Image 1: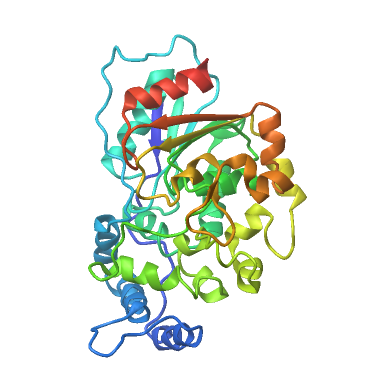
Image 2: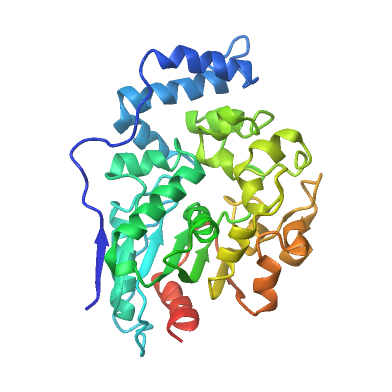
Length: 370
């Protein structure tokens, strides 16, 4: 019987909050790693913006969640249901669906609830969106103030706690949620992901946030400071999800990137080199469906949605998947997957997360049901 599931909200916020006494220490730490402070005549710089957001996390999480949802980098799915007669699958997949949402969104939002439910109904299987927080506030805030690795670990814990998923599942990610799915596949993949459907995903990381103006938005100001010269240190990498998949093509050889970047570890670009367990886990998934938005202004460059990225030391030359260093070295098994015929490419015409349920059902029918 088809149905959907979203974990019930808890009455109290479950995320750990820094004590008031920690804020001055964090400010000192942020200043010590060189995060820019306010220039003369400015009300606040990136360091002050980050501290202000940390204060809101402790004192007014509702306001922080609202700022994240309303920021230019929010990635919220809210598309209407498809007509009942459109793209109804003729066969039943035996595996359920698991959805992962983007930054600023939440499994508890109406749009994610609807698309999760409709997809399960379309195929006739159990379908669930797995949040990394136990209520809408925590789930929204964890997409900003929680590391990428920690989000993956919580996602894996919730997957393993759901008896409906014990035999595996098909994963559908939107935007930043694809980083969680990629991390789950490489770090865990047990129960295994059968098909990973990456819609406009941040799987290769991003080199910037071009539509996020730091002069007009506090979230953007914090990101501009954290995802800049100071991105690759343990403090920043331990604060912001977005810093963890920030990939500066001019700093790939730096000790900071190789030592502290979470994305570098997943790519096999860190000083530790390739992780054979991650490579083995990546090989357990049968298909990777990569959907690129041709006019995407959020994932930069948008070739990253097809496993590509900027060439080293360039912010102009873009490499397709098979010319990237991680493909050639096969550090995490991408080339092996491609040579086995597991990688598939699709496009949408518009900007980031501009797609319809009919398109989503088309990909599901083609690559999962079919």
